[in-house]
Length: 255
Image (cartoon, rainbow, N blue to C red; front, side, top):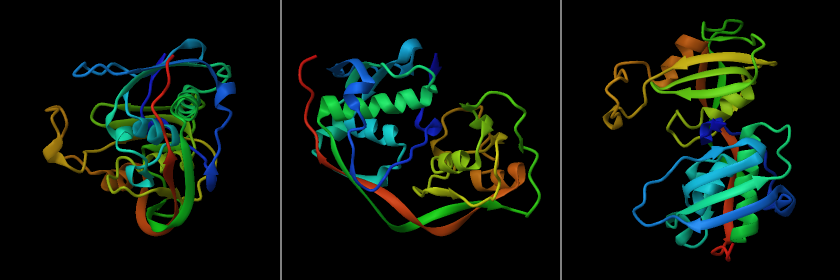
């Protein structure tokens, strides 16, 4: 069993009308219930056999996590998609051999399409982003090494810190859109191919929001940490941003 967050996910999407992605063939069963008012949220998790338990999610959150997109990449839809919370149990009958991240993402989108009648439109447009590059050509930092052969993993730990094994620079760049806090997509321009292990520790940009006394408020922000620990840097660049518009959504019918 593995607990997941949006940090761990990646997605490849096309432009135009976003397809249903075989929702009926993915879902074996699904139960969708309104989250009780004022009840605490539980944990969202992937269990054995492709079963996913989703706790206290709005439809907007389901879409954003399912597609692994920033808030500014999703628009449209009725107000309730942002406020109504749902508890969901669903099973992916095609989960065998898939990473938990893929099962989680597929179930979120399949439930959104099949149970909420979701219709999405996507398009690309120019926007400001970041390019991940080498700080010094031919030189890596101590926290970035060629893969040791350990199984692929991508784990956030308190601090915060990231310990990852067997990842590509494209995966790493895609994840970086979250800790940068700038609502910008990050594209890989390091020129590094193959798999890498990553060890990275930083201090959140907004230190006034840090509640955990164990976090070093004087530690390096993500931009400095990338340079000093990994030998990488982020530079502003123009990108083609993929944005989504919700064209239709409805409350789920009875289970």
